[in-house]
Length: 317
Image 1 (cartoon, one colour):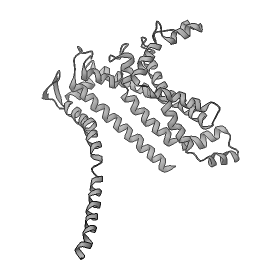
Image 2 (cartoon, one colour; image 1 turned 90 degrees about the horizontal axis):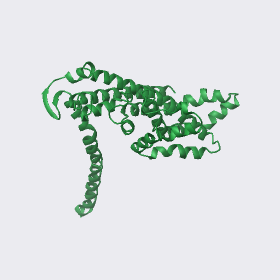
Image 3 (cartoon, one colour; image 1 turned 135 degrees about the horizontal axis):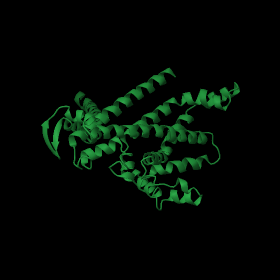
Image 4 (cartoon, helix red, strand yellow; image 1 turned 90 degrees about the vertical axis):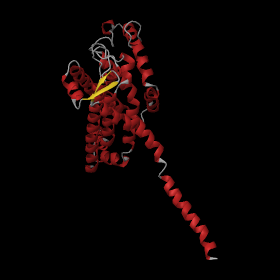
């Protein structure tokens, strides 16, 4: 009789234990996808960078020779530093233009100025488009012969400003960066808006009652409390700037034209790994893998330092 009473309880315990173990199986598909598409390419690129390559055929083990060639052998060394400089410009302009305008727009929406909801939708719409579509669209707009920008400038009597925006080395990179800013303003605006809406209104009202004017409220109350949002956008902008590829490829191809003025590290990697480099249009898998490893380590290290600094600032606040 005792056995009949305990049997259901034992079954319930076994079922409960099985469910507890089954929960641990759910992350397995995600781990498999992460391993195949993230971990494996990283490990493969690291291993490829230590070998000599004849086309796509792996040769002898050469240790760090590919890394040394990347920084010392011409024309790869000049291409690397030129692309790295362009990436730094890409990041700096995005931080000032994209995030600066996004912050102003977020503040306008936060103050519920008339038309703010329209701005919110209008500036986020470009984010819904594919980067490739955006690239080809702006390539048509910036066309020197029939592009909308030069046509509009001509209609307003500003023919002196008409130029081949993507054909001039002085304006090509800046044109692409500004297009990227136009594309990314909506997302940055939402991040800043979330930060503004998290600030207690009582704090702002108390500062105004104490006699603080608008500038003081922004510089002494709002900006310090917006540090987490600003740091998040700084990290995301940094990563996006040093991984930028699709927009440049859609607007200028893989050669960094004109005269490598739009060459970025990701575009340079594409030429090395898949062909089209200045060194005979041949692939250089070893050098490309070495560049991928250097780029990954640089982005990972800088991102970790920025996140560490952000955590420190949050603790201090």
